[in-house]
Image (tube, rainbow, N blue to C red; front, side, top):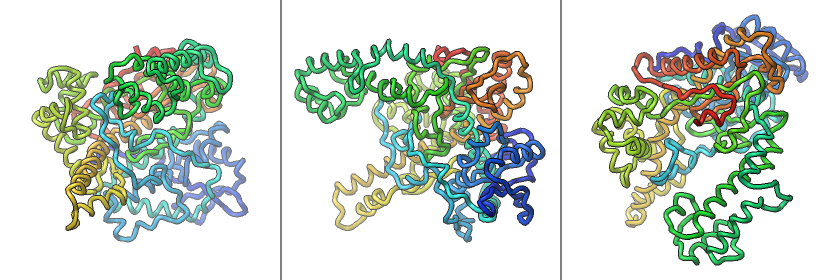
Amino acid sequence: MVTGAADTVGGGRENGRVRIVVGQGERGLVRLVDPAHPAETLALVARHELPRVVHGLEASGHPRWVWVDTREWYPALLEAGVRVQRCRDLRLAAAILDRSTFTARAREHGRNRRPSWMPPGPAEAGAEASPAAPPPTTHSTLFDLDEFDAAEVVATDAQATRLVDVDAQIAELARQDALVAESSDPGALRLLLAAESAGALIAAELHTAGLPWHRAVHEEVLAAELGARPASGRKPERMEALAAQVREALDAASVNLDSQADLLRALRRAGIQADSTAKWELREHEHPAIEPLLEYKRLARLLSANGWAWLDEWVVDGRFRPEYVPGGTATGRWATAGGGALQLPKNVRSAVVADPGWTLVVADAAQLEPRVLAGMARDEEIATASRGLDFYRGLVDAGVVATREEAKYAILGAMYGATTGESGRLVPRLARSYPRAMALVDRAAREGERGGTVTTLLGRSSPLPSAEWRAVQARASEPEATVADERRARSTARDWGRFTRNFVVQGSAAEWSLCWMAGLRARLDEIAARVTAETPTAAASGPVFSRTPHLVYFLHDEIIVHTPREVADDVAAAVEAAAREAGTLLFGGFPVEFPLDLAIVDSYAMADG
């Protein structure tokens, strides 16, 4: 049972009894209604008048705004200088409630009739999916489901969304409220819906404010790495030189290094029996072509992901404004609809520079997922080992493993269910030392292997495996099934079990991050009053954020706040306080810590040191 209250998420001054639904009214006007008094219209205005009306109602009552899709309404409010404290995003809430195991019984009783006008949630279009393949043992990023949950998704045109009548929204709000009230854990779901909707507001604010970006610094990075900007259709000079080295070493003058099939054929002709061109596999081979090829691939990635064309498209007026997609993956992690904000390489982070008189507060939660696992499992032994900034060192100090590197492999193996290699060798040590934590992920894996659904701490449930997956399992149980059929069924079942094993932890960690950001957002509002008139304005951040500290970046467990320098220490303290508060909301008094690696810097790159 989650102990936190949803009313504490996203803003500090809400009148919890007041909600205002925003939607289509008569004659094409926008209608605002308190759902407690649906016959009484609060306002009926043209769309261009909405910011003025919202500003007045927000100042007088701090309601929770209810709308189908935050993307439809909030960006225009922000552009007009109007900010709201809280909302209920009906689209995102429905995506959670209509799949959650917490609401299964209520849905059986007839509350699962989602209206036909409700657009799907961002992760629902891919509800049937294939499981994540287990990473190679050299995989450098723990708890990464990017193989399943793409970091980039196809954008939808929010402005093309059909406006929905207010009365229809009131009916949907009542349906959602009933699902929550009749669920197995109403408190958890209320907190999750509040946090998810706060995330929708934050995503719009991140786009509007933008991440401060110094174009000249970025161009210096590109020049140092790639050489001068090439003519259209040409490769940069450094890439051309590296390509020549690779072709000479492979004795393949015409090989296209950007074609995996062509490159694999050339590698094999040269005696390099690689199955892919992945970096981790190429490094296993000794050949003069390998090092220049790896460097070529690194520069090619920089050119395509953050080169001159990216800079021209995505950095305008000193700001990088990606399109974040809250709830864009199955686990609840965010995605982006362009710009690659979730994959900014370290070599371009030096271009993220605060405005004059401002600075950046950069913070990331140290080893978030294993700490969340400790709290979910109520495993006091692993919670003790996780105290302090370095969780992996805690495992060494507890005598579970001999080195910090072994600790990383052990946790990686626990999350992915490794049975072979270094990770597989170390997992039994974790099981002996932390049986409660390991039992939680083992149960999730078994449920996935059976084709079942698992659920995060607050109530987000995993998708069911695909029809193809179910067909493979069914074929293995038929009388004429072959040994190959049975082997394939076991393999695909284990793959899905690895996904569900990871889902419960990664999804719950995403919930912690949402609560962290929502709580911080409210605290930043309080700090804004301390900014003096002498502080230079951050004009490029727009009318809402030009004089107030504000979030400008989010990456799973890392945030950046752009703040006037004079209140930077206050902001840093608020970041840490919000992290503690998020832990309390999710885990009550259980003694699990969420320490932050925190820095106050002028450039994002300086935080890496």
